[in-house]
Image 1 (cartoon, one colour):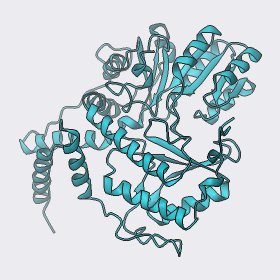
Image 2 (cartoon, helix red, strand yellow):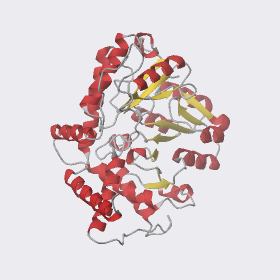
Image 3 (tube, helix red, strand yellow):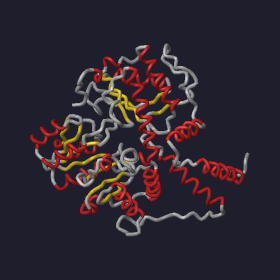
Image 4 (spheres, helix red, strand yellow):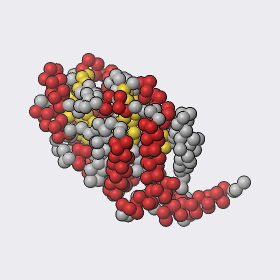
Length: 426
């Protein structure tokens, strides 16, 4: 058995080698980047070693590796930030400095607070007047809606596919009103019937990857005296010049002051709310946000801002996979949106379960969404692409989907989104 000192020295040696390979995103050309990711991640991944046995409903590669399409960290930020932290720690130990500095969070009301520093940098990044961090376990959308409801009971209009948790459903009670997914006319009619209130949408929808018509939504809510709340959870890190989301990308930050986001795309368990300065004291939680989470978030924000090439690579890989799937004959209602997420709307729960289980047996992991999280008979499989997926992995996924068609395991010509002008989510 190795002694502790030898184990430590091995760790330091590995750390120095890792630093030379630059796990933090390098500034390379697109072609070089593709080679780096394909080579770097293949070191630790057992790829499909054979064609799945579709006759027996069992993928031969299932025991070696699961190709996961459920990641909420599309740019692999968490790994890069963790590697940066590890290098910092190991460098300190290697240089004989075992006294590691640890910052204190004096609370959100202190000028020297780490939380205030993160909130200030987030505001600059998101081009918002102010930003408030929400602690682990506290949903930012619930926090914001609750504060509005405490002041005055208002109707809450929410897109049929927007993320809805039990807290909001319980607190708003009879005031919660759904409108058809991404339909301006449907929202207009609901507001005319029930009066002004809060309108909750997602800039990029996590179940289907569809993108909200933000400009039209913004114009309508202003004309009808409503407050628009945009959930940017699936847009941060991926969209905009510095990964600041769709609102910033479309230069709508002055017209949409209220944005919320959970931050898995930044490798964090925290959440954030953008707001007016006058709202800060009302929205802040009495408990401090965790120091370790704040430290990592500072690293993650700078990391995301500086690596536009990773966003470009994610877009190119997403388009590559979607184009291949469309060419095979799968319905393209959701595949045509330029996002890293898409949904295959299968319709029937039993068929969704059957296809999901089959894909897992072939080493492909997706996420199921069934009624009531989606409208009845509109059950779907959600796919989230991560930048670390190699071309080989994507091609293997395409091969499995093609075999599903050939063997008629999947019959997409009967799915709800296969028909002309389908009314998918109402």
